[in-house]
Image 1 (cartoon, rainbow, N blue to C red):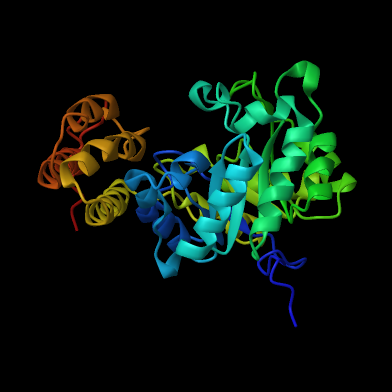
Image 2 (cartoon, helix red, strand yellow):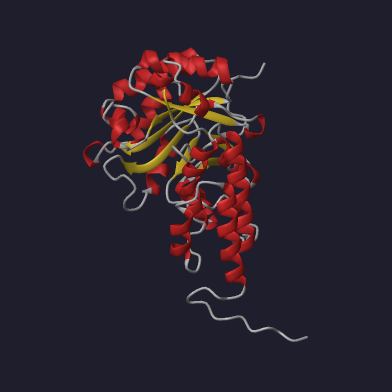
Length: 343
């Protein structure tokens, strides 16, 4: 009989790509889009264990997912082992994800001040107790996502990883920055390699994957078992396709052209509006994605200023269509007019 706590997508002959848990980003519509572009595993937005235990209605929405998203993990955060265990059990029984992930990495102040996320890293005994409580409460795998420490003085990714492994974690994702680093500087990939050598469970590398070649370089330099992509996926779900090609030694597909990029953006927006009960709120929340999809485009700043005021999908379509027409005619500021080719 197979072990229900084994992660079947972690195999020695293939490096799986993960979509990171990101608040306000890793919603179901984006997870499905990334799966279509090659993400092997997705993880939910991180969710408060306390809110789960209280039955918060908005929190229940964060936990919903479609069958096509599998394998999927639900990530929870909190600082009380008993409440974390209770939340994990509820998530398993009610939503049946493939695994539960514990957030020991979030650096956001409002999470850390409650000792959640990376705040837990100040107390490794607490880290161990949380992992042990969650692992003992559910029959599916428990995984963890960590940073290298809370600050420079507590930087100890190997020590943190060993505590998690000893407590029953079945895989560790390491973002090799400290909480104090936030997102500044460079992720120290060598710490991913050191953790991989120190523990016997799979190690997933995370941090500074911005193009397909980065994924292959991380695997080759660290020996990690999997790669998690976070901010690099913003407005760029095709990064998973490019990363897979790089990992397999195949030609890396180019970024889509403006017309295809806008088509993907509209598909994402349609799914976001269909998934959210309040369409106007969904459209407002989607504005950040509009900003990401239009990054790097000629006169993109002017386009974003217009898009950040939209309240309906019709407005988005209209503004993108108008931009595309001017783009194809070469009429945007800074673009050279296109000269018709005679045949």
